[in-house]
Amino acid sequence: MSTKSTNESRKPGFVAKTRKGTGEHAVYERIGVAWKNADGSFYIKLAGTQVVSDFMLYEIESTEAPAD
Image (tube, rainbow, N blue to C red; front, side, top):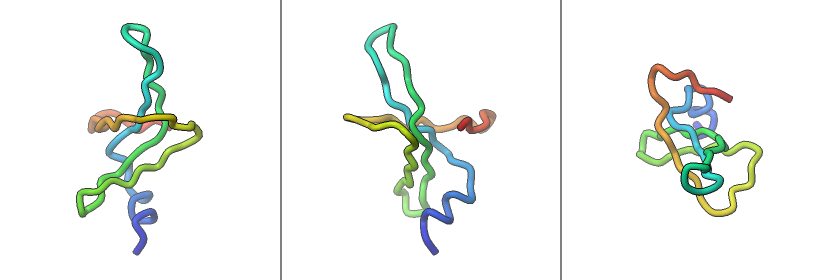
């Protein structure tokens, strides 16, 4: 059983974002989603944006529907 097929059948638990700008003018761009694996690792699926340095993972609130 592959990790990808197992994880893609479930809704993601995290959203990946990168910060653009600084201070009060900073905005966060959504760049993907992530799932936590049974072994504690994460499967991260990035979409459409080149990540130059780093990104953050934010846990998706249970009342919030994942947006694409």
